[in-house]
Image 1 (cartoon, rainbow, N blue to C red):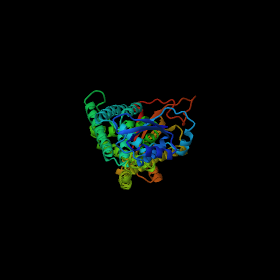
Image 2 (cartoon, helix red, strand yellow):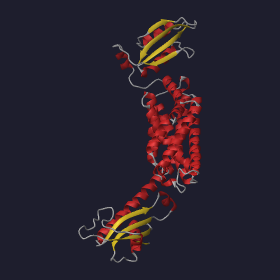
Image 3 (tube, one colour):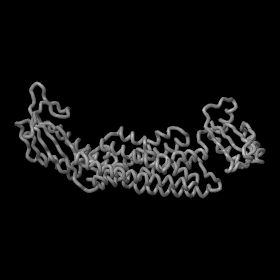
Length: 453
């Protein structure tokens, strides 16, 4: 429920009260004894979804922008007379005036915004290097990116170009600042003992997650944008939604900066693409939801022009996402192909060993070195096979080539196979169990490990 207080200009009291009576609003009127510009103040309760309608009615009755209209959230209203109003104004959507005020509150001052953004990036970069998901999530609580993302869409819908431009500017410059901060931090850390001198950041799972963007990343960004818009319209959970928006933007921006710092352009570009896709998706989903919710400009006469502007912006953002989705599609497809090949290779080799039923020979482990980038570059998969074999067992000299020929025939792709052997000793009381992940009773040493390729 909202409590609306309106100062009535001189000569407008009768028309204002008549308009409220026509709407079935219960109100209280107080004489105004201020400077003389207003003759009375009227206040009345109304559900959130009815504020916009009532204010439009009061505008037609003579309440202009130079008057004072205050909308206050109420903790509790005790009255049996409110049921009729609640039935008349169902729903939870706030008025465009409240939406505008909330969007302004969400966009902090520039100094505050960049201070929190840089601190968030520093924490997130530390979390990436430590491979700590908890640290990264903690950094997202600090990140102030929800405000600019929402204010850009609100400014577009309500035809406030200044708010929209500031929201877009803060998002773009903020993410560029995040990339630069992570790059500087990564470069400085390389000169210290805090990280190993030969560290390959591509092997860190939290970094690798941001360098292989696929369509699932797009769903995260779209969901975050919708949740952000919904939380503002309903006034619930905005802090937690801000974390979700930051998760889609800050970690990949920090990853891109680390790629620059460590001289890995592939990492920097892949993470930057993820940042850009997520940024566009968040703005697109929020803009569409605000439009579908029926918000119109504060000046009703500008609705048609704003409608065309919103549609054009939606089309431009959608085209940008579609172009960048080519990259997401390529990564998604190649990742699926690489993982499918790995699974098929392991299955084929396991079946070959099972059918052979060789005594004293055990398939210990199979690994496949085949990345999405290898598919795009046309590189052959590399298969490493580790076999446990008795000391007196004879090893076929062309075993690696046999595996190569079998996999090439079954999977239809050239492959490079490398076979390693571990000499084993097995006690008579407890024979080896082929279902275990390794060897029972194995005595291995560097001299007992042989490779054939």
